[in-house]
Length: 131
Image (tube, rainbow, N blue to C red; front, side, top):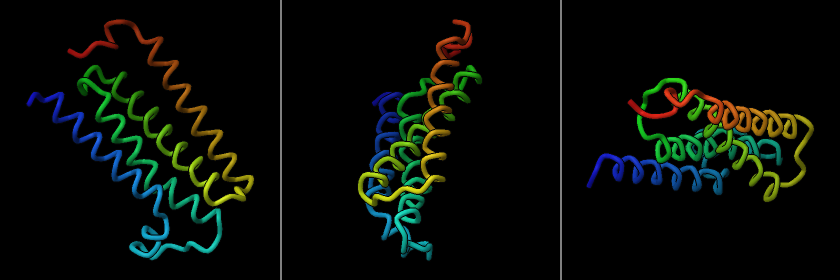
């Protein structure tokens, strides 16, 4: 098994754990002693614990090498924001009643993820390929 296969498998495993945390906010609340009475609190549990793991797992599965640094940093931020946005959107669908702050966070996450994707596309070719 090559390094890329191991890296992809590890990233996929992180995505699975992130998916579990995204789908089970009450388990997370009990394990961490966090409040979970309102829909906003449930959405935050999904976005704060499952979302980053979703994004980090996607980043690990995606990134071919830690260098060049601009590509890795933009990729990490972009995938993290995308993972958090996915988890928050799941919370919107399953928990309902997102407040204005939840909508603001989701908007910021989406804008940052898109901004990172655009910046990645605009990197000079030398900063896009692993060395």
